[in-house]
Length: 255
Image (cartoon, rainbow, N blue to C red; front, side):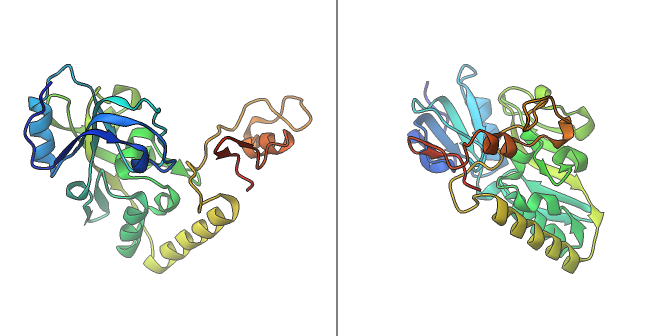
């Protein structure tokens, strides 16, 4: 089908490998980088309804198959990365990096520190309920703004939002978060400590998607059923002598 006119960038047969952290993947039929929300909404409204759309973030948790995607891949950029402080609420565009949001919130004395070590963007954090250190996006989410597949803008309250009910083809464009206050110096120190711990235990300098494996239920190092809250995937990998194992161009982290 022919593509609607846009103010942003619309590229045919765009390889996706360089848009993902793991640097693999074939081309999308089209890659659309909208200039702003109005550009995105007008494009979706005019796009043939039979054409699939696939929004992506910064590709930190995404593996694209060699055959690519038969879809219009939508990647948000500068028009969607604003971060605004409104009292104790932080409103961030979907393309804003989690780390940038955490830092700007800390500057304002607001605690979103758990986002600092999550290697993604706000749209991905909302879509996948990103979290660490016992905190999750769902704990602080107030509402999101989306553009539906037919181009209609809509605001959804967090209480009405479940991962399984985000409408098919909808694109998250912004989210607002409730926060707790803190002293900027203490919040920045906390984030520095989180970064140091992550660098010591994870391959942060390599092309890694972070925590790839789910902690398994019912496993213990003796092979007997264990206490479920003590089970860690790294221990299973260690016990199987798979730390540092390679296959082709992939490696199990030695950390």
